[in-house]
Image (tube, rainbow, N blue to C red; front, side, top):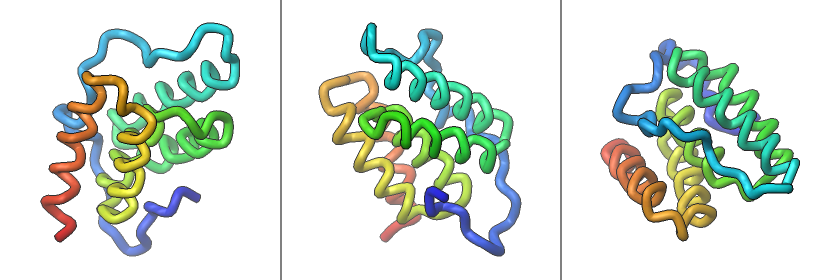
Length: 125
């Protein structure tokens, strides 16, 4: 398990609209890298589950994506979102930091990661 499941927490709701990047494009993968492409595909499926409030199912997909390609920074971003929904803000912070490491060269995603970090820090003092 990813470590953001917190027993005894109230049921989670769907991912808030402002937390879901309004990307019309698919998450990018390097051409010719089948492991990364598979990981990206699982991440995209997990993102769709988050949008509908199916957090535990999303976490399962994110775990599989992580095992296939640990360098998938988008997956860390969405793992962080799932942990925010589970109210595990300390684990969310760790996933957010990993997303920043892996996506540091992507200015658009870094803006999303920094916004996510601000939301996490509202809860983590």
